[in-house]
Image 1 (cartoon, rainbow, N blue to C red):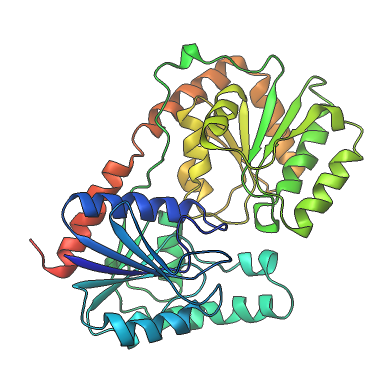
Image 2: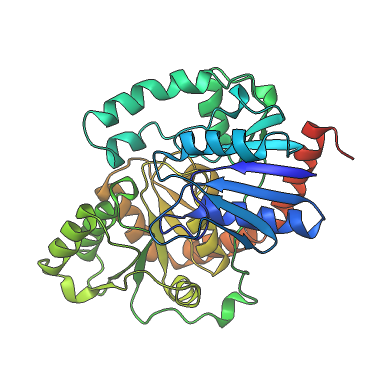
Length: 371
């Protein structure tokens, strides 16, 4: 099968995240099974116009906002008629492939933007984006859809998509679960982990504020922060941390590699995630696989990756004070902590890329009537 995949960024893009990891893992397995895959994505400073990665081809055209027009032109000029199936991946904005590709086409989406517009965009673009998202999504409501969580499916149904045409596949994680929970050595002091890019939609400041509150009940509590800090929000937060009375108990590591990521996930006691919205919450499942349970806000994606009071804690209120209370209560309840930790670890072992790929290719074959 020849698969043409439109998405705005690939894994080498500096802004790449969990969705791009999923795309590469699926693409590698497609290639291994004898299929052909071409990604058409946006470019970035210093990127190659095209390259072969793990057997699949990446073609980079335009930039963050112009990729949609350039992708249309590139398809019309070079790729029209090439594919058996076209994937229109929605990452904030669709490519609207149904209106110009001649091949069968489907939609792949991890999450809707909706609330994220208010955290990541400036006025008045945030208002415009929030208002028009349901309108442009309705134009695609007749498409077959693949997504990765019940939360996103519910969002799509709410804007008019047929629930019978929305198929949920499992997520997968890059790192392998640890062999034995008993082999993990936690930090000497109870430690909260905040992992991921520091930006408004991740609401990292709320974790910092919760730490300050929790510190009053657990004096030896530590906060470990890892992630990219190349935005005003991050720089302001790091400045405030440096002026905080507990600055000596907060360690900022910057962006970390996979090896360091595994280490801090294993050694921390709790990971906190406070995003405004997620497709699934891969960081939660990854931490679970390394023996660390999560305390998270009650938002789309995170309520899919965490089973409340089974594999972790979902806050009843999305506030730093409620987050702090849950952290304190969990750290002070050794029996409950160990139970959640074991349950989270076992659940993480079900979330694999092999399983995700099996579910993905089964749907692709069905859509394409391909045996």
